Amino acid sequence: EALNNEMQLYPNPSDGHFTLEWKTEDFEAAQIVVLSITGQVIYQQKANPSGQQQIDFSDRSKGLYLVQIRTDNRVVSKRLMIQ
Image (cartoon, rainbow, N blue to C red; front, side, top):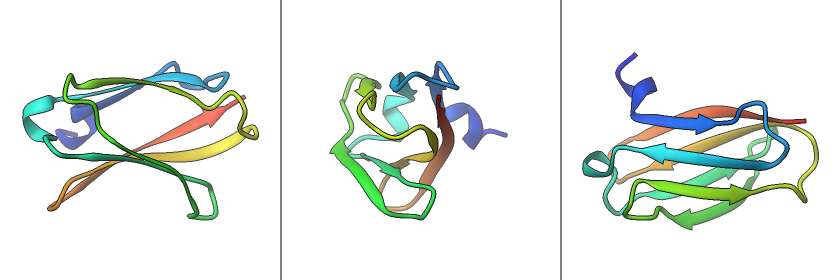
């Protein structure tokens, strides 16, 4: 439950435009990684130090994706549905 509240993803389901928010003190030097349902990395970027990032996947196929914030010692994940 606690890890689930460390990262917010909205709107979800999404049209491909979504916002990712996380607690900055817990995720300094983090990477944002998005995986396809088959586990392929389709997006990777250094996390914005502000704790919020707008992501545009409107050119991606509709379906289920896994959005992660990765640090050296942990990974927090959320599912994202693009409709």
